[in-house]
Image 1 (cartoon, each protein chain N blue to C red):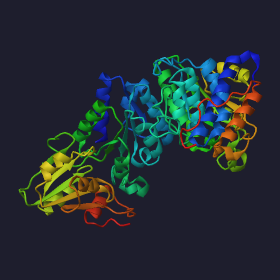
Image 2: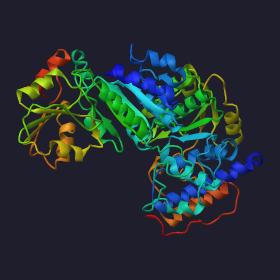
Image 3: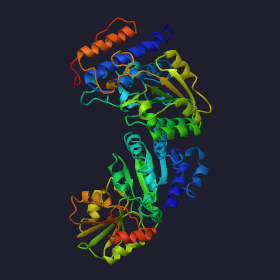
Image 4: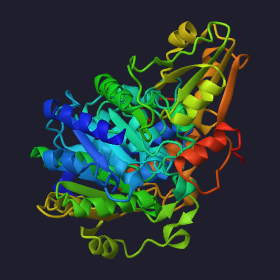
Length: 286
Length: 290
């Protein structure tokens, strides 16, 4: 997903001289081509994330469209006040791009699990929040971020199941298994992985994916999911404040909406797919 | 105060101090001590150094001033109004409901580059703007006015590393070194000295000047442009400078000269310090919460 995203950014940078990429000393084998092609619009800010975001805001104040790329928690939680005050308060076109959504870096332990970002970024005033579910979805999100020129957050995960056709940044129908209007819909938020597809199949549910969490496409959600008896929101994120909360808000309460999400730190070792299986069984624990 | 060589900036400093005192009096608001300590720095910057156009605040070729010690907002608002960025009368709205003159500097006020208030943001923002100028070959300069208390912040030192590494010679930081932070003397809370030696070790040009001596400030600011390194001017100042009963007294980080008597006695002391006849308050009473 990150490779598709950076290739797309580089393609856009050829035509759009405002595009500036800032990295927090991360992106080995990802950002080198961009850096070589546009050295005057590339910056490695070092392992200093607070300053990285302030510098990005300063560049944006001078007319650049700045993309700040780093591993999940470092480009969100570590520099949160810089995001709030320097970027959001001034409504500057700075897009924070986090790689490692959910348990992408599962084996590296809880410091590298990105499981609170959606809640935190949704709370930032004026922030647009995108959680692409596949490579194409990441490109579509990038296009919208660039055209809106407002504070934004993009969470990238590990590419999983390819999705045939991405219908913008709202709700994409991934797979319909004929459960019909009275049945169950599974709404995936995060990189779409085989385990979620299996989960939907096991529940004989139609499977959808949602990319933009803020502004939430509430009308579209109502239109597409409104007639289902059950809506199960699956996200590799804490239960509180993430996609489940957003969807509940859209449907005016939690009546039909159920949550499969992370609860607390996941301290077991294991690869991403192992950790995903655990929380899909509801085995995440505080 | 008031040597003949820099009469224009001395006048500006006097007016900034008077207006700041009147604003905190009317609004019953805090932080007058840090506003009085930074007044001369702002007077020299706006009087002699900054290339700005009050009638065109976003003029692309302007010098950028990042006012990182946002709590000293009254001094900056006064300087900007005196320069003509907005009408002087608006200063009387400070502290009133609906005003854009917020209690920490707000970028919605003409001439203010950034809203600040949380310490440790300004130098990084200034680095971003200075880097943009270098990458584009622009000739404008970037100035960042910091409090000494915000040298406690790790983010400030991240920016110190950054500015030196990227050879931001178009960046000048000015530290208002009044030696007091919220709960006392900076050296008793989290020791900062030797500030200049630390900055030099990080690759900056650094010098210390009397932050109330306009000639010293002016020559330091004019000499600060470099091809290879950012410059920091550590301006030794007195918190509450200009009003005897406020000088170096921590309570004036918080208190306002709330009564008419306190305000008048402050203005009287100030006039005396400048060798001028006493002028009564210009804004009148009845505004704000005072």
